[in-house]
Length: 365
Image (cartoon, rainbow, N blue to C red; front, side):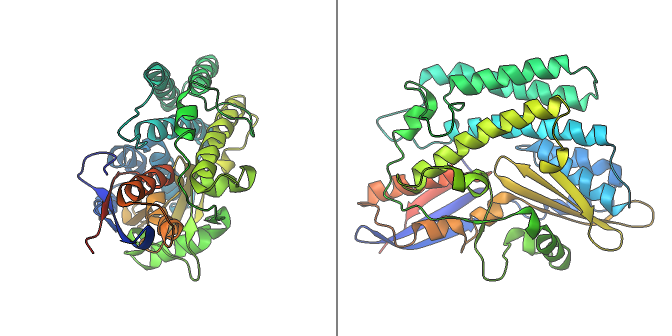
């Protein structure tokens, strides 16, 4: 089952023993080595280059780059620039969460995205784009920001993503339709959440090992990052893993929209969205909480202010590690016959949400 066409994908192969998942093998064909494009460039070029290279969550990538190169140069970014980035990242996070959840959902043969969801999803994406454009233009009038944030929130509500915690998505909405398909027989298990307190270990590993970004690991752990890792304690556990993950995604969108309003009003610290700091002599890091989880960039600059080394670690590398949380959630699970197993594994993958296409297949006995 395929969520989108290649190139660059997460390949997932299931080995079944009857109705039980005997093994899960994950292989990534995501492009490697993109961080080398930063080397030799002026530090000031890094944010724009990051937005172009990693376009899916471009504002988050640009913000992480800006934090990293500023810290590497021994300086601090202006608070206005950090606040603008936080607004752009939050808008992008809400819209990308909506887009990925609705367009990436494996609906099955007898269902599809409700037609009523198309217009509000387009509105959400347009409103988020306007918020990013206004903040990138360095405009100081908050009125257009507030108006665009209200448009984004209204679109999310129309899709069923704004219901209060503990209340189901309104009937007839896209999120209600997805919730009706989240009965996969996967048991709930608490995640090993990647936290800001892990930044030091992650940044040190990125600076030490150029291959760490492609297959990150922390000793004795299976870290997960993203909406479920952020909010798993706040969602019901009794309906299984898929239902809990969908509710965490919905609650994360709701909280992201609230944070967006507070940040526009100057009532929230950008540090809860993006942060950075030194990472050794001439080096710095940036970390951003984006739609799919915690994103890290690490930069080292030379005496001329040019980038001598660079690394970027996307949330997908944690979540779809060959021994990571997605694999752990499926190993040993009873998913039914092969067709049901494929669909359940694809729906779980959509909820864990890689930043590239994914493909789920069965291994031949």
